[in-house]
Amino acid sequence: YMIRAYILNNQTLTPKILEANSPIPENTLWIDIEEPTEDEHDWMQHLFKEEVPEEDDIDEIESSSRYYTDTDGIHITCLFTRRKCRDTEATNVQFTLHGNMLITFRESDVSIIRILRHYLKHEILEEPLRTNLDIFLEIQNILIDSLSDDIEDSYTTLEQSSDNILSDEDGKIKELLEVLKFQENTISQIRQNLFDARNAVRYLRKSTFNRLNPNQIATIDRVLNDIESILPHTQFIFDKINFQLQTAMSYTNHTQNKIIKIFSVAAVVFMPPTLIASVYGMNFNIMPELQWKYGYLFAIILMFLSALLTYIVFKYKKWL
Image (cartoon, rainbow, N blue to C red):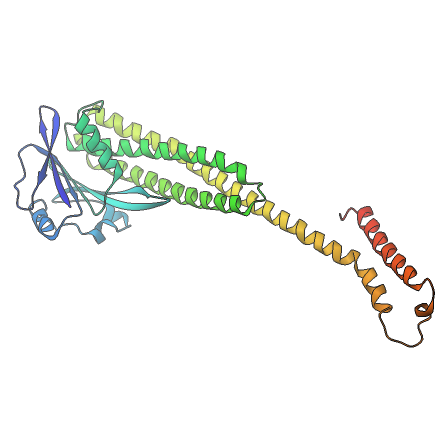
């Protein structure tokens, strides 16, 4: 639980932890609120004239609930994805452009914001962040870079997993299916993030068009162009996932069918010998071959020839 304020001092953002009863420092450019306690939530009343956002509010999916303007400023809700072990989880962050200040409100940790805090701490940003718009656009820029890296990781993972497509080992097939499931979920989240980021940046451009400077306009155009260039890659990865999944399932079914085919052929090959054995296993009194000196040998040879003839027919028909 924490409230961080970033104060602009000589074009440098200095972080400061705020308590629930702390006043907002002068020249505060960004207030980041993460998992607020009840006291911190009450403190947020000082920031908003309208209702203080709740977790349920920022999880709404309607466009009118995610992008709107009121007396508190411009509100934009963005979707972010975070990885948890072998799974991904989506979380929403509400951005409010409140005068000259940016307020971010979230109910869980977001790696993109952690990355930005790291950049600010070590002063490794290419351009200093002088306005709340700069901070918002830098977060979107980091998000797009991160999603690009995730897509590259997916390419690499799918290239490696292709070796298990034609495997006869159940363990490798299970491993492949787990990889494909994870990648499908990851790419779905990435596509969601990209579409959401595109809508957010477009709304920002429309709502703040008169306030944007040339550098900010260029950043917005670059972010939108990057999104448009990345989206086709996600569709290609979806197609690759589906191809690997269908190929693996087809090969597994083909292998199983071959096994079933062997059992089926074996049953048919031994059907005539079984019939002959059944005939001579009858307990009728009058069966001439039972008293014949070569009756046993005759029955064995007859069964062998019947099985061999059936096998030759199957080979001739190319059923084997």
